[in-house]
Length: 599
Image: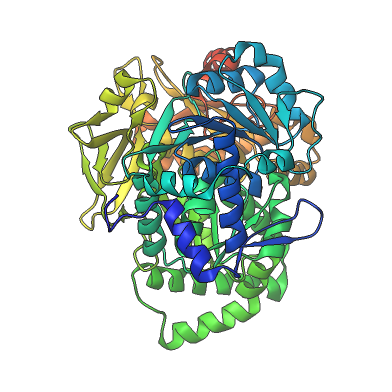
């Protein structure tokens, strides 16, 4: 290992030595917050590594993890990395057959499970998973009457006889090019692929991103998005260790709003769906304001929009605008942010999917500027990002330091850097297709402006080819549709058709407001003539006017329910599975074309 390179493991050792008594993470699994120090984090992950060694695991062996965000998840990943192994997360929403696929594909020997629900998935498929030797249950979980299953306490104790010197020798032999992490892609098409990340990928990317984002020791974050996803894993594990960030675990994603108010993080990462929920809630509250309150809110938003624009350009609001902003903050912004739990938040980030420019501008006008970031698992997370002082809404910022970005002949985004992965496990053909001479071909389409800000224009595989031979990227059209208050999700349809249509789901809170205001039953609102007329007007005035005629949405069908992970339309990170939508709603697609053009 070179003198200048440190793995995440060695960074944790140094953190424990220099800040051993400082808080590293907290959890609320017992009903009240429990704290662990950096020394305890280091010691516990060492004990996990020794336990894995005791079970016979060695260099390159895989440990899978199936559970919600909690300390044991992180400890198992870091422990596996310490002893030369590989950690691989599995989404809690995965069905037994999907769990079996990942266990078999990775040749996993040990799996960590959160509870009996996840154990039942493994038990149902165990006979089909020949490499699996042991199950370990997370702390507090009931241990099934099965000799192959260990409690968390027994698992940790099993490593006590392993000599520390043996572990130290393994750690000191870790190399930058050694694979230590599998990120299974969420599988929008076909089975997931295993992205192989190395110690250098993780360590270099965490340090680069933390420094670029001005994340410092003692900052607090909320860990709530799936740890199987590279974005949350980078924040919860690798940046936290690299920069001494305090992690607060939220083990139930449905309680994020409550946890936010308790934790009040300084750094908060959200997928667009989270920011959309904030937008919907705040919009509803502001719509209810009347008289002086409404006028103050509108004035404050105007001030906030100007102040955010100044900061996005790298300056500070001064003079009259600076004074106005302080007043607006006292009257509106500070109260709103405190109500959300974002009053201490310095860095707000959106990623994992495209964010609506309308929502970014709206929240920016309320003193909550959000930096949109772009990347993928194959790039260890980030490729480009808007950063404080260098923001253009509607773009995903400039390439991050050390990442070189260019566009291919068809405008595909291509990049290289120390964040580029080592390839797909057991899939050389797919590796060779996207990784050429060190350049990662992302599959995304984009453009670079004169200031080197990157804009994502679509996804190569999502391109719609109409019967007239027109190539249409649906991303921006769908973004404009979901920016409408009543729309939750939107999927453009038009492959080999004369014109575009869309499948639309309703945003629940906005739908209820519309139903109440119009005397409708929210359960049958998707059939409402009043709603259809309203959306036809909105699409014509606010969506189609942004695009060329060939890109206009000519009709739509409102579905009676939201898309969901459980329903199969969304990945665990809320990306739409187009192939599933096209197949599942084929009848609805036929009907919308039978209706002809309405807009």
